Amino acid sequence: MMMTGAALAFAGIRLPAVEGMIALSVLALGIMIVAGAGLPGMLGIGLAGFFALFHGHAHASETTGAALAYIAGFTLSTAALHLAGTGIGLRLASSPWARAGLGMVIAGSGATLVFGG
Image (tube, rainbow, N blue to C red; front, side):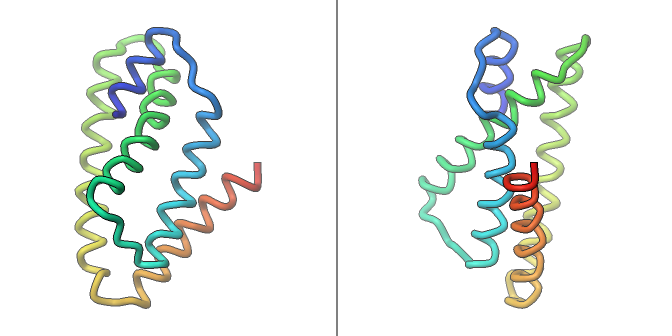
């Protein structure tokens, strides 16, 4: 979905509230971590895909030349971040206090982005 968002941006198709949706995605992730929300598979995939659309659009909107290399870079970087996040998440899953603390930091960051400007 990130690639779809990027393709929309390159095609000149604007999405509403891109930055706001990215901030909301950070807030939602933090809240779900704190709450220990285990979403059903398809709902989790759909929610992640929805937010990824906005992330991809934002990345492509920031491209200044060398678009193919830029897209490859943000795609590989995103994959690396997801792998690292999964590893951290698996390690913290056994510690509710660590999970809650990390979730609060992420939710706080998202709240600052959403409500702080």
